[in-house]
Every structure is written in structure tokens, then in C-alpha cells.
Length: 141
Image: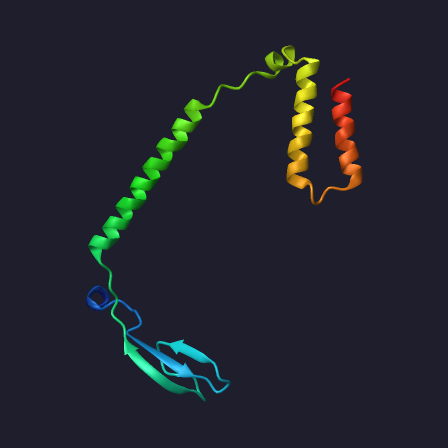
């Protein structure tokens, strides 16, 4: 008996149409607003219009969107891989430190100051500007 009931329930679930809104109603609310509902209009409101809705899932369109997404992912992976291959290898800290001269330190400090000023000029205080100049002066001694 219970097997029969279970089989009937499973059969009904597989045969039943999907639960989607089949009608859309626009209701005028008492306060002057509007509400879109799939059931009855709320109490105190009136129905303005009612339309039937068809759930349209186009298998071809869905397949095409998935293929577009897969193509985009593949192209993105290739672009990232190419960018990483083109990037020069990092120099170890010890090697970089050996080639570090006073002129390079001064130049880097000046570039850092320029970048900071370009980025934060409108928000920078006088004390911050003086501190930047002091760092450059220390690096360029």
C-alpha cells in the first residue's frame, strides 16, 4: 500500500507542470502606489490589468549562452597566461640589493613622491608633502 502511494506521489511530481507564475496582475494600492502580484490583489486595492505569462526557456538560446561563456573563459585564461609569460622574472632580494646604488635609490624615491602626489594631491596635507620631500632628500644624499 505505502509503495503504491509513494509511486503515485512520484508520478504526480514528475508529470506536474513547473510551479511558475502564470498570470501577472497590476494592482492600484489605496495609498496611490502600484503592486505587481501573481495572486489576488491585496485587500483595499483594485485590479488595473491582468496578463498571462508563458515560461519561455529556449534550449538553443541557453546552449548558445553557455557556449559564449565557455569561449569567454577560455579566451580570458589564454590572455592571463600570455600576460604572465610576458612578465619578466622577479629578481631575488639579495641580487636586487647588490645592484642598488645611491642614484637608483634617489630616482626611486623621486618616482614614488611623484606617484603619491599625482594620486593624493587634493587630499594631501602640508605635513605629508614635507614628509615626502624629506624622504627624497634622505635618499638623494
